[in-house]
Every structure is written in structure tokens, then in C-alpha cells.
Image (cartoon, rainbow, N blue to C red; front, side):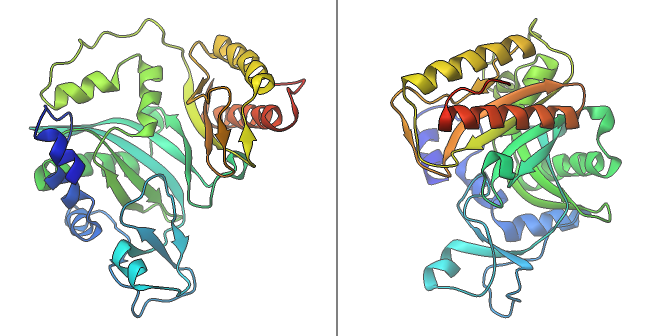
Length: 316
């Protein structure tokens, strides 16, 4: 928030000011607002005093992203731990993300997606965000859609959010929706809407922030079906040498022709060294259904894993 304020002091701000970010990222304030809107929010505490240490609570950094450094709470603590973390009751279920377009007069859902979290085939940590699979509007469960509508109205009225923002949800086994956190900015899953609908989420965000933006021209490059993405982490230390780069280029071109859009992003340059457990590349895939997209992402992740470890695979 402090950096945002410094930037906003010298140039137009394409997003929310530091004061808004501080408030909506405060889990205590957010929790009260969510509950007042009639939605669920996991019990959250600023101190672990008196909490069970059986893993039913998670220790979460106050400043983090992508699920980094979240861990089950088993009782170990220091003064710094208490200052820099909160403790939140763990909610098991299906992870969802709702993209909301917030404007001065209200908000509307921009897109829905299922989140990939802690997938072993991505070599991700247990709570790490490792991708998303878009869900067509007509297939979104009623409780999730209702939560999106309520959250949009609440976030504008209670916090004054503008532009695109993302909300992480968990739907438990009983079908109840729990709000986990709000990201007051465009998020990683929103580019799937671009690919699905041929619209620009960047242009929509700028317009909602009252900044000049390109006209909403629908892209001619719209491939039908469902889109998904996966963040592949390095299973071991990786050196991107010329052999890896050449093999990688061949599969990238093949997959991109098949899908009609670039199939890989965040591509490391030749000579880059990537430590184990760090993000390696981002994969995309298109399919007829969410499960088919996930299977394609898994196959492509396995193919790239072979390239980055033992050479180019013979099948993709």
C-alpha cells in the first residue's frame, strides 16, 4: 500500500489507492463485512493464543501471494511469527475464484474459475496457487454465482473498490460458500476470460478506473471451448541451455497451433538458472470440458518435465 501511494502521488493510478488496499486486505475488517453480507468467512485471529494445534487452523502471512508460506498450525511461534501472520480456520472443499468488475455505481461478475491448488503434477507446494480452469457462466453453481453478486455490491459499498478484483472462495462439502480473501487488482485467472470471450480485461479495468482505455473490440482470435492454465514449478534445479530451449520451442509451437493461442507464457531465457520449487513456466490448454482441459494440462506438464530433465519426449 505504501508503494501504491507513492506511485499515485506522481501519476494516475490504475487501481485502488493504498487506503483501500489496506482495509480490504485486513482479514478482520473483511470478515465482518462478508458476514454482514450474509456470506461465510473462516474464523480468523491475530494471535494463536488458545487455538488448537492439530492443523485445523492455518498460519497465513499478512503479506503474501499465491498461497506462499501458508502452513497448518502446530504450535511453533516467535514474536515475529505473531506480528507477521494471522491464524485462520481451515476450510476443506473446492477452490473457486470470482472475478468482479467494480465501478463507482456497482459491480458485476466478470468471470468464474476453478482454482488449481497444491497439485503434485505441477510440483507445487501444498497451498500454492498453480492454475485455473474457466467455468462457463451457465455451469457456475447457484451458491457461487449468488456469492459473486453479493460480494460485488458489498466491496463497492463497504470498501470503495474500483476496477477488476478477484475473490478466492471455498465451497465446502455441504455446499456452503466461504470467502477466503480479496485481491484488489486484476488476478492471474482473468486472462482466461480474454481467451474465451475475445475481450480485454486490461481495457475493462482501465475504463472502470476512469482512465482512457482502448475500445472494447472483440478479438477475431477466439477459440471455442473451455480454457485453463497451470503454473509449472521446477521439480529440481534447472539450467535452461540451448538443448532445452530448442526442444521447448518445438512443443510450444505445436501446442499453440493446436489451440489457436500461445500455449506457454513466462518463458525463461536461455542461460537462466531456476531453483527447485520456483515457478518455471505457465501452460495453457483448451478443451471441450473442464476435466478435459485439466488432463491436457497434466500431459503438457509431464512433457515439459521430461524436456527440462532428460531431453525431449517422443510423445506429447
